[in-house]
Length: 261
Image 1 (cartoon, rainbow, N blue to C red):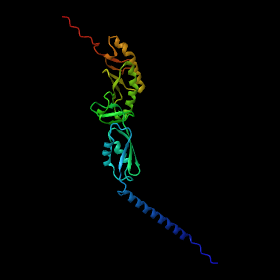
Image 2: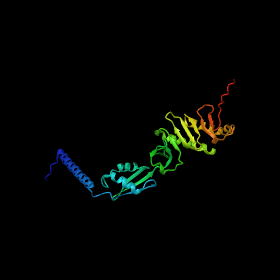
Image 3: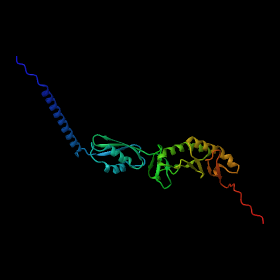
Image 4: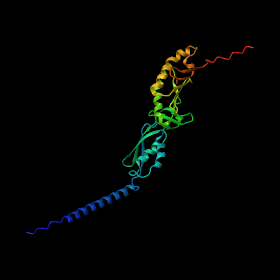
């Protein structure tokens, strides 16, 4: 009986290598062909669906503004760039963009919810409940919102301080209209009565303690001069053991006495 000679190892290795090379080449050709097909205008985007609670933007306007910034077809459009395009629209805080087969994009939007104005009166900036400052048309928001100010990188801290201080004034029928943090870390509050309070620097609990001491004692102090809390023009709380107080119609300056001849 004839026996076939065993195939040498180097020949086996050559055959396996040739098979792998051919398979790899075939896969590359298939991938290139698929990529070419996907880049052809066979799968154009037919529309963009906008979801979410959109109150400051119109879905039609959003699509019209963003669509020209989208390049490619259904398969090749850059979703990250599309998300950035939507998030660049005023009032849009977050956009989630995904493909919806066969030929649409679905976008879920979250808008900013303003809780206060940010910066000076001339600025068109607002701050949301997450402490994020954003640009928007301030004519679209309630004029009763407070105004906060400070270094923009500390916007969250300013909002946090406002949320702590504002409830302290409510039992006295007062409200904070403005709260600002200086570049040196000093706090100032302007009340709806027009009073300006210099709250000073320090940790949050220190500022709160000074404010509470002021509110507990200002009524009896003002009553000594026949005034109420509404008569307070300003107060400087930056003293260790007390505060300086200005009341409307009250002065501690003694007028000069006429000289005797």
